Image 1: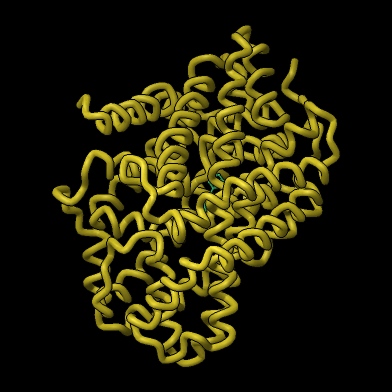
Image 2: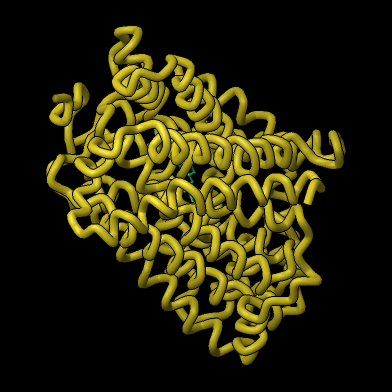
Length: 453
Ligand code: PHE
């Protein structure tokens, strides 16, 4: 019997702590910054619809598989995959899934930290009243000159990496749990307030249409791939973050229920962000396809015009920094746990080393918006390439392999024990989703993107 393998790196104090931490990982820049600019670049409604489908049909089954593997393996993703494969009499090469996840975490955090740095700078700018009364030209000019200044963005990137390293080096209980407790609900309220503002712009209906009226002419095969990639990215799937958080989860928590609530919160936040941002885009005649600057070129206009905007703007960007912080912690944790568990490094040392390497890679993204903005490969900057490779390839591939492992290579007994789905129907539904629906859907999107379908 191996059901009760104990985590060698601590456990959450309660289920709620796990839900908060997993939601903290899932909800971040992906929901607000990335979801909105991706939706804008891919024409709106059709992208959103495919995204939502991917969350339900692929994301939720993969998340259940990932939490389940983590809780059963109880170690960092590399060791977890290796041990579980050994338990089931399979080859050690399954640990490559864990490796790919660690690498994806490095790459994602390298640019994530740069964008989180932008967010911090925007919090400061709001606090000093920079945006008050500004129109769209002025706000765009502020953004352009800010990101074009590599020195400034590098400093913010550095500060954010230090912040992330600090929390990670304090460990599961003291570090991760505390960071999430009160910020998520406040961020939620702020978003509701922004949606309220968006309603007052007179362009809310246009925003609604853009988000919810699908026009499939607008969505390319690459757009479909991006929608799937965004579902993985937003739910933190496919790289071991959710697996390692699952490894700290106690045996009594219900995985299906927890996963449903995390996916629900995550999606709600993304949709609210879209409802807040697009009416502002249309009210000001901005371009929905503006790219990664979209949030930074729209919301300051709103804050510049609403009463108390300097206060609310600061609060919003500060909360977004916190949301990014709790996500970045989970991006770093798999590598840190691996260094501790396999190489005997102390948590602090591991966090420092991982942080330094990621910081260096991040310089590429800093430069993508300044000195290297003209340097492209396949029409993509360094930032675009790293983002494409991780969100659209590594995460879906990692998630695919995890769900395939859980559904096809783990014994039925193990799955039943972990999921505790006593109800036969629920179990069969899970089986169908993880064995066939989710893996086939990922394959179809991949094949479609390379033009085979
Ligand atoms: N889900 C996070 C967000 O939406 C980003 C993330 C991706 C975190 C992958 C962990 C793993 O911002």
